[in-house]
Length: 114
Image 1: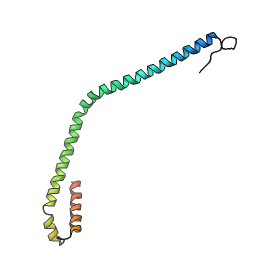
Image 2: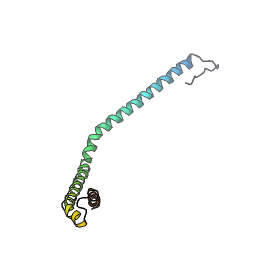
Image 3: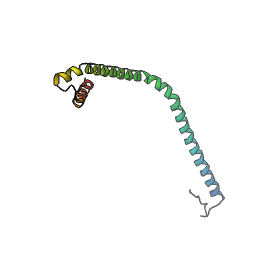
Image 4: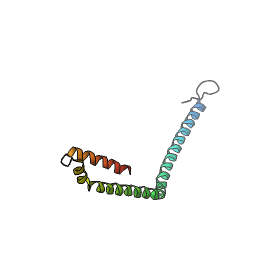
């Protein structure tokens, strides 16, 4: 805190009054800052509903693309699982679970890249 001295160099009644006035100004400034922060927070919360409505189209588009991707992945898995037994018989590892899993894994990876 600054202490304002009177003309004689010693703290006087005028300097004490000035000090009190400075403290009141600082308190008022802090109160205004708090009010500004609260106002910004309230306007942000109120604006969030309009922003969320504006972004709903983008969200629905992203969800639709994700659903189509999941459907395509599931379709490819169904395509792979059907002939897996025939592939195992043709390549000669019909009873070997490890090799069957390796083929299935490679087919899944290929289905993901399509």
